[in-house]
Image (tube, rainbow, N blue to C red; front, top):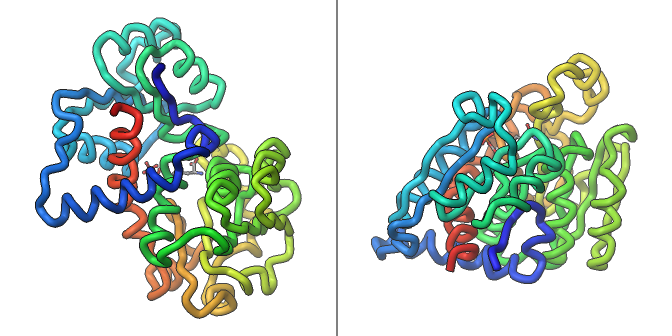
Length: 302
Ligand code: CP
Ligand code: NVA
C-alpha cells in the first residue's frame, strides 16, 4: 500500500520518528556519511504556484539521496491545457517513484493522490502545508531539545495553510498553541476540532497585547497567501495591528525563538529587526526544509 502526505494527520503515528530521522540524516550527511538511500529513484514535482524553497529543497534533497528530481510546471504540462488530473496521475505513476504536488486546491491534491499509484507529498495547498510544519517542528526540536509541553504562539492569518498545519502539528507532538488573528481569519472548525482530540491547550484570540507572554516559539506567515491576491488591500487593513515587532518578541519568554516559513514581507507580518534578530531561526528553518523532506521521502519509500 502506498502512503501519501497531504495532511499532518497522515503522520500522526510517526511524526516524532520523521523529525528524529531528519535530525539524524542531517548530522550524518554533514559529517560526510553517505546518505544515498534512494539511489535510482525519481521524484516528479508538479507546481501550480510559485516556489523558491520547496522546489530547490526537494530537488537538492533528492540529489543528496542519490536520486533525481524533475520540475514540472503546470504551465508546461498538458494538465495546464485541460488533461485530467486522473490521467496525469496515472501516467506520471508509470515513470516516477514519488510525486510532490504544490496545488491550488486541496480538492485537486486529494484527487491526484487518489489516482496516483505512487506516494504523493503535498508541497502546499489552500488548506495545509505539512512539509513546512514538519520542518518547523524539527527546527524547534533542534533548538529546544524537545517539543512536548512547549507553547507556540502564531500571529496573523489563522485560516491559512500554515495555521491549520500548525494546529495539527502541535496537537500530534503535544505542544500547546495560541492563534492570534482577527475573528474573520480564525481557523476552520475542522482543524480546531481535530487538534482538540489530542488533548493540548488551544487558545484562539484576537487580542494582540501580551499574546506572546507564554511563548517558547513565536511564528507568523504572510498576510496574503498565494491565491488571496485580490483581497490584498482588505487584508493589509484587517491585519495592520498584528505585526510581530520588538515589543511582542520581548514580551515572549527570554529564550523564545522566532519562525517564519518565508517568503517574508517586512513591515507587514514581521519587522526585519525581528526576522533578522538574534532570536530568529528562519534560515535554519529554510535549510531544514531539505533535511525534513529527505526524512519524509525516505519514510514514504522504504
Ligand atoms: N516556505 C515555502 O514553502 O516557500 P516557497 O513558496 O518558496 O516554496
Ligand atoms: N501561506 C503561504 C505560504 C507560502 C509558503 C501561501 O500559501 O502563500
